[in-house]
Length: 420
Image (cartoon, rainbow, N blue to C red; front, side, top):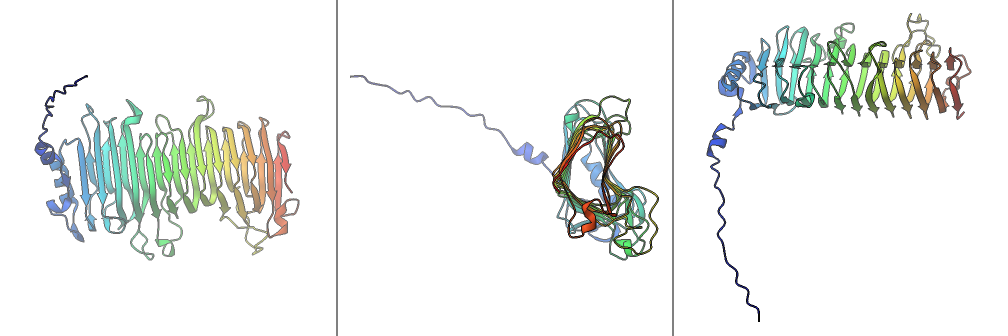
């Protein structure tokens, strides 16, 4: 018979005193420093007092409760000390619940990390309201372009940037500006000028302006009535990669401007994904300069430049430029598939324009129910357009009629194979 003796040995667990951590874990609230949630008096001094109290705290959470907070000067959150990772969270009580009424020429909030390379900043659940005309920027983020780029992150979610009412001429020149952010994420951001009825000519310059940023993700956003909805490009160092999905850019001069690299600066830079979007433009839908591995899929394009349209036939004079839905300049390894190019427009409209220095472009399964030219190709470097459908309810948009030209192939080498 075998007898097993079990010896009970007490296990000692170190007891961690959580009190010091709870004591140091603090949510900063501008109301504690005298901010006025009614919007009657200037809350900028209260925000500045709160920021002074935050000091060099590396992990910061700021909660701006529901209310209207008047900012007669821009509020700057300085972030310094690059010896460890910083985290800054600025959140409100919800869009249109927490409103920052920006009543100065410079802007609303600025996270100044220009000397930093190790931080993550999150802005969420609030609105910026322009109380003057042509305010420089609603929200700005800047980090240093050095060190590990994966440590420079910006997240903007559930943010609304607008003017007070439809009859107001006020607006922000730029909604959001970010410099040297890696993997910036913009989710459910709405930017618009409401005062088109008062001043239909003057529009904000940019919705989202990304300078020297890498791999931004823009999802479920709505930008309306600006000159350029989204700019992502090189200014001082480098810009590359982008993912734009489920995004609505309408009433804009340029929907998406990607400026990665000029010819002579090296290979085009990689990875652009644009999917399931709606772009309504006057000048350019998507401008791609110096990019490779570009995928544009399931996008609805329509052009609002309609002067000279034969379909409308209203006696207007055709504008002296060529509106372009997708303009490829020094671009390679591009796929454009299952997109819709629709609506009457300027007879000078070009759905897809391919420059002579672009290469390896495949258009597949697209529908062209539009006025103008479907594909304007200047490249002899492996360009193919297959499985296209031309036309719709209006027979003259089928190609071969006066209103739609299927192809202009100046190089004479493009491969085509249409479904109708």
